[in-house]
Every structure is written in C-alpha cells, then in structure tokens.
Image (tube, rainbow, N blue to C red; front, side):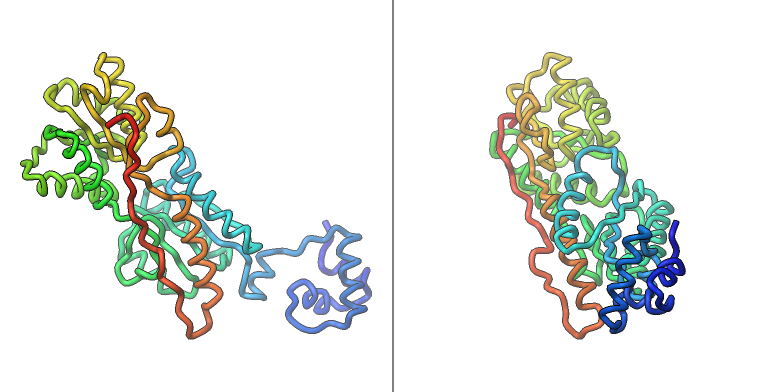
Amino acid sequence: MATIKDVSQLANVSISTVSRVINDTAQVAPEKREAVLKAMEELSYRPNSFAQALVSKRSDCIGLVVGDLGGGPFFMQMMKGIEEVVDGANKYTMVMTGHHEADKERHAIDILLQRQCDALIVHAMAMTDDELCEIASGDTPFVFINRLVPGFEDRCVFIDNQEGARVAVAYLIEQGHSNIAMISSDDLDFVDAIEREKGYRQALEEAGIVFDPSLIFRAFPNELGGSFAGQHLLEQRPDVTAAFGFNDSMIAGALSTFRDFKVSSPEQIAVVGFDDNHYAKFTFPRLTTIRYPIEEMGGRAAQQALDLFALKNTDESVSTDGLCFKPELIKRESA
C-alpha cells in the first residue's frame, strides 16, 4: 500500500506539500499540485480520512446512533431520510447501534466522537437527560431524534406522542366504543410508551370514561409481543370492543391472534395502531393508525445537524422551524 512518502518521492516534492494538497490547507503551486495528484493516481494512494479530519477539523461524516437495525422498519425508514440529506450535502453517514441500553448508547457515542464526526444524530432512549445534556455541551454538534431533551430544544426532532395516542383513542370513542384496551410496551421506562399511555388515559378522561388499569396489556413491543398480549386480552377481557396499540407491529401480532381465535376485526374488536409502517396497508384488515413520519423526521434531523456544524464557529443560530412533528390519523378498515 502506497504511503504519503511514496507520493512525495514520485512527485518530487516534500511530504508537507503532499499534505497541503490532500488537506487543501494552503496554496500550492499549480505544477506541484498537478504532480502530486498525478502521483496519487499512479500509486492508487488513498489519504487517511481520520488523519485528514484531525488536520482540517472536519471529516465530512455525520455520526448516527440508532436503537437497532433488526427490530422492524422504523430505524431503516429513519436512516433513509437521514442519508438522503447527508448524501445531498456530499457527506457520508457512520452508523452505530445503542440497543436501547445506556452503556451501549454511551459506547456508540464515544466511538463516533473518536472518529471526529462533524456532527451526531442520536436516538437514545436509555441514557438520562443529564447525560445527554452533558455530551451535547461539547464541541461536536448533537441532534436528538425522537426525544425532547430539556435545554436543547433547538437540537431535538420529535413527535407529540401523547397527542397521537389521544387522537387514536378519541377516534375509537367517536365510533361508539367505551371498553377500549391498550396493547402497550412492557418497558415501563420507555418514554414513547409513557407518553402514549398518557394520551390513552387523556382521551378516556375527556370522554368521561373511567380508566381501568386491567385494560392495559403489556408485552415486548413487536409482533410476537402483540400476539401474546392479544391472547391475554381475549382470555381476560372478552367485553373489550376496541384496542389501541403502542405500535403497528404489536397490533399486527394481535390481529393474527384474533384470527386464530375466530375474532373478527373491526366487527368484534376495532383496532388502531401507531407508526403507519409500510405494512399497515397490507394487514387484514388494513390498519387504521397514527402516522409517525420518521423518514421526514430523519431528514429534518440531518439538516439540523448540517446547519449546526456550518454555523459552529459563528454567532448565528440555527432555525427551529419544523422540529416538532404533529401526528396524523390514517383511517383504514381496522376501525
């Protein structure tokens, strides 16, 4: 593998001249620049991007921390929105996973900081607000997605989870339902689950319906967990006529169990999900749900990260327009 020394010898210039050409840090005579570029091409020399970042104070890399890459379409859609904006800015994305565990989230952030990323976009659910505030106070710009961190509202791209849940349950109430279950996450510390349960209870309260804790069925927030919770619902509360799900995956699992038990939807149990995942149009029945515009949110987070980096050493402030996304009810056949 060719080295910078090999390039300098072939081009008949000093190593420092090669370095200035690579990093574009100072003027170099046109004939010397051309000689260096020609030598690099002949030797197939590839500059060390990390070394370049140390010199230029920019890596053209946006770091991204996601929860996981195998838990459904949520993070893939988020990454799609981020990469479109980052690629459009002629930068690239480096991805780490935090697996919804504080230690792993910290490790992922540390790795990206060590790689001299220009800015970080972080989806972290396990780390505390205090920890996130501390790291966001450093030199590297941070943007938090799917979370509102107090004191850093200009760096947070999020959705009003409570309002989305309230709208979903209010719609079921409008359809004449009063015995409405919630199929929810079993992670009692998960912010999304907490906010959506608040919205569920708010809609009941606004309609004068007394909250019944036995109508909340918890499980792991995927299709298998939804199937498990759906079976418990049928066994323990046969009087239920409607259910609101923490996400579309859980409701898809519940619908499968309902079919196994010959319970039809929406005739016997109407259901509403949350996310509007790509398969919501293909469940049977097609799923009424709250649209979670995660791809658009990813794009907005990427733009905020790029803007924060561009204005890093200036007195200008970034725009905060469009950071809070509003949920939208998508009406289909399941309710």
